[in-house]
Every structure is written in C-alpha cells, then in structure tokens.
Length: 85
Image (cartoon, rainbow, N blue to C red; front, side, top):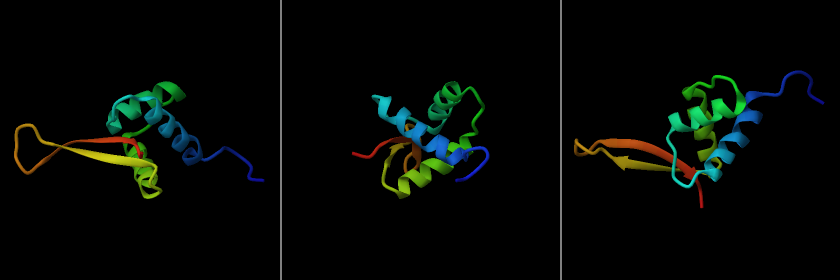
C-alpha cells in the first residue's frame, strides 16, 4: 500500500469530471479552475487543469469544442470542454 499524501492527479481528475458532468454548458479551463478551487478550498493553477484535461482527452472522456473568433477570420476563439457523449 502506498504511503503518504495521495497524488494530485488522483484527486483532480474525478473532480474535473464531476464538474463537467454537473454543468449544462461546455466550460473553459478558467471556469473549471474557479469551480475546482472553490470545491477544494485551495488554489489550482490553470496549467495543471489543462494538463489533466489533455490526459482525459487522450482517454476519450472529455471532448474539445473550439469556437471561431468573433472578429478575426481564420482564428480560433474560445476552447470549451465537455464530457464526451
């Protein structure tokens, strides 16, 4: 049995999935970060959330939605994340 503090990966991945399941709309990394920080009562970096979202995308649990830029053509706007259906 592993001793010591549980890894952040094992704590954050299920929480990210719960937040995405509870949400009615796709979320940005920033909004996931805010909800996760409130839930865990600790500051979580957006870069950490991004890293775990990419891992969840590799396991095909999370889907990416890229929106178009509202003012400039041929540029991406917001990147949104949702549970893969």
